[in-house]
Length: 363
Image (cartoon, rainbow, N blue to C red; front, side, top):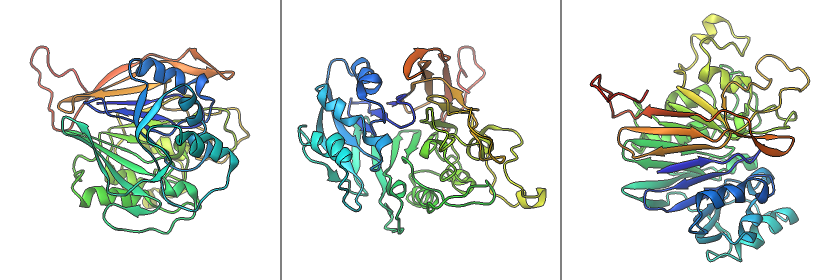
């Protein structure tokens, strides 16, 4: 199993490749494809210029813009072009970069993704459509108005490995984390659905998690993280983004800092907040803007993750998963190899490393 977080700047694009080669491209970034996405696909899928599933998490430019260039570069979508249900859009940019190019692929025109769809990725690996447009796998329906909250949530299960990606899905306002947002809380319902459907357990949770909405305070509240219990998190982010200041301190700090202080709550009030264990690591595809006007504590950009370019997770689903990075960051609009090239192996929950010689190499 491979999961690729492709550095497309202040946007998102994730390529999932199953053990049998089934490929899912989830979002297509905001930059012209020939600056990042098309180049990456050429290097990753050199012998088969086809993608099985193209999935648009929701209809915002930073997620759909690069699709047209994929088709223009002769990458074909074989099975389906999917998006969440919702009000029709008459955006000319959306039509020219998503709906019209889709008709030129083998899969044909864009379709509404069915919640509950299960796709086999080979060797027992599966992809579950857990949520879209406020509809959840267990039948729960949440009234959503913000396009971000229509985001498609995909759960990947491969033996002992579990992963969730959910676009720009909202987590609602939360005093404990200092989050203020007009988005509604869909993420907590997704977490409960995963638990109630026994796709994850309350003890082990997720191995890897998409940190939604580029690290915006609209997502990733403590009540959600305390349920899914991720080991590692990934943020698709870029610059400039002073309008948004992604990734935000009130998101990243509680995930990775020893004593986060991002709200004005007293120690007594904080003691009543959901308990979240620090993640082993948070990876960022790039830096968010740091030279913005000052903001109150918790509302400013915090580049505290491992800023390291394209991120690739690989796993056999049994004992561990490896995360490696390219070091390719955008400098003045062009990719440059200025970031660290990292490689770390993390233990899966079912695997207990031993102290025998040659064993116990994961953390």
